[in-house]
Amino acid sequence: MIQNKQLTTSEKRKAKNEKRKTKNEKRRRDSIIPIKLYNTATKKKQILKPYRANTIRMFVCGPTVYDYAHIGHARTYIAYDMFVRFLRMAGYTVAYIQNITDIDDKIITRAREQKMIPKDLARKFEKEYRADMKNLLVISISRYVRATSKIKEIISQVKRLLEKKYAYFTPDGIYYDVSRFQDYGKLAGRTALSAEDSITRIDESVQKRNKGDFCLWKSAKPQEPKWKSPWGWGRPGWHIEDTAISEHFFGPQYEIHGGAVDLIFPHHQAEIAQMEALSGRKPMVQIWMHTGFLRIGKEKMSKSLGNFTTIRDAMRTVPAHVLRLFIASTLYRSPILFHESMIQQARENWETINSMYNTIRLMHARIAHNTNAKREISRIQQYQKQFRAMLADGFNTPRALAIVFTYIKFIQSLGQSLSQETRAAALEFFTDIDTVFGILQKQKLSAIPRTITNLVAKREQFRNNKQWQQADAVRKQIERAGYCVEDTPSGSRLRKK
Picture 1 (tube, rainbow, N blue to C red):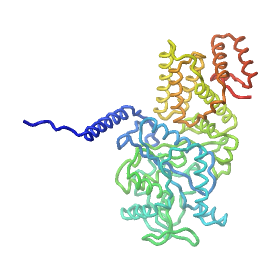
Picture 2 (picture 1 turned 135 degrees about the vertical axis):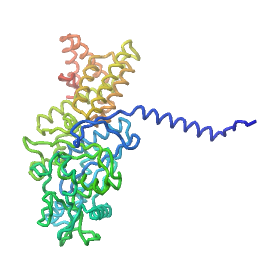
Picture 3 (picture 1 turned 180 degrees about the horizontal axis):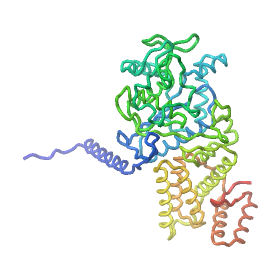
Picture 4 (picture 1 turned 90 degrees about the horizontal axis):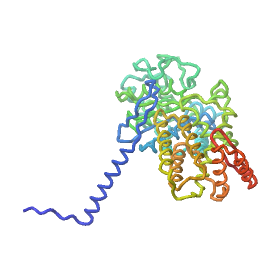
């Protein structure tokens, strides 16, 4: 007769931990929110399907560090920061890489003007850029990767493209032959350049076979940075750095590639031509995301047009939280107009959201429970679900914010009857809002006395009951205590005089 083996204490503990781990993993899988995104390549929304279980690999084109970053950069990198924050809140593990172009014609030219070594200039402005991102509360990037840190990988890609006959030699470097890649131009639906393209990155050479051919490796010139290669000394072209970095970390295929809309052609098309020619696999990227231009009047903001405002200059008058809300108020792939009236609207909206958040956070619940608590919590959770649904459907931040303001009006309508349970549910929704947008700012516990928050709630209750005379009397009490209460379309907003 075979007897059952008795488990030791450590074996029992291990089995219990494994069971708990399996249970937690199942709970996490079940809580994953399906995401639908607009794909530039297909011109329609599609479900994001990770190649690996609940893991998203995302590459976003970073800056060329030869000058201070401007608010057009802020628009793009804040939008992607919010998007990655949402992916992580939705239950996904996200590896988010951003490249730093630290070798380029623009860097060499600016260094010559400043009488600096190109590497020193690049390091200086990389440091400034990363400081700007920190000040803008961009916290989602997993890794910054310099182009010059992957010279070995770049040389490997150029070598393989030569072997596959997709590249050829000229006296001034090695070029990619776009006529050899059948799908060239498919991402943008064209092969010809336009005024909106990054045309400064198309290398002109009388030795090129085709007008659209681009340089993979530039032959060394006097007093320019250079690296040794099988073809002699030289430096990488612009497009090759991204595929060298992404292949190194993600392999030949991954989930998301992002950037601004002006990178669709030729830059992102060049990346596709390089990587798909090397791997023989399609598509290189499951979903292409592109942010719209930030415009000043009718023109896009850019250094080449000379109409840019640096991030550091903008933040002297516009706090990061307000700038983030301004950017979230427009769909990421639509153009956004940078105008004082739009910034002022964002400022007022931020004050409304932040004031309500702090009012609830510092509020003393009048009663432990009330008969309406269950209904109130159900309404809050419904708004919370709608908020997540708007973000999951094409990352529609304007519609998500509309839900936030509807939710705030509902909370205001509850007046002083907020129970402990309702307050907890309300704060949980605010945690979601801040997790994605990064816009809330905690006031000190002593900033708003309990008597004042109670008066605001009392006044709101009078207003909801159309008891205008009583509401006005309470407003005067609030003002005598040193506070102002302002009525907006989104509800009341409290601030110190």
